[in-house]
Image (cartoon, rainbow, N blue to C red; front, side, top):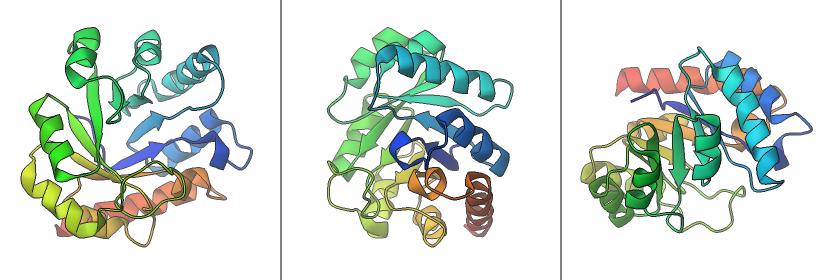
Length: 211
């Protein structure tokens, strides 16, 4: 399993004019350990082209490329993983398509979602949302740190918290039981994505050392 401790999720709408590949380059320099491309705008061809550019950038770094939702795009570019939501393709169907060549992550908004994801063969679970977040409006009520701890007690596979996470609360999420934190605006919307990533990486490392 790759290092999921600082998991970047891209969002062109928050990028302050930066190209996605440039944000990823800066974030990698700052210490992100995993990159998920989440692209809701543009055509499939544009998504594939962007994913190929990021794949090339990450080559040789050991940092996995995750594609959100789109198994076809993930296969086209040879991504390391695909991340699926509760309304996306079922895990067993996705596994038949990608085989064992790709990791499959699943979003979970409650203990039951996480338990089912583990039972059906997910490689990791994204707990969403931990806190209230403006970057996604179709999410369940925030789980809070108690919700994170409850999910940690129920499953053994890696957990990544997402939703409203930044400098001020990333350590709390790790201490509550997550193996990593996924961030969008905390890096993508930062004036300096490299510095933002470096600051988060330092906080996460310290939290893990104290756990």
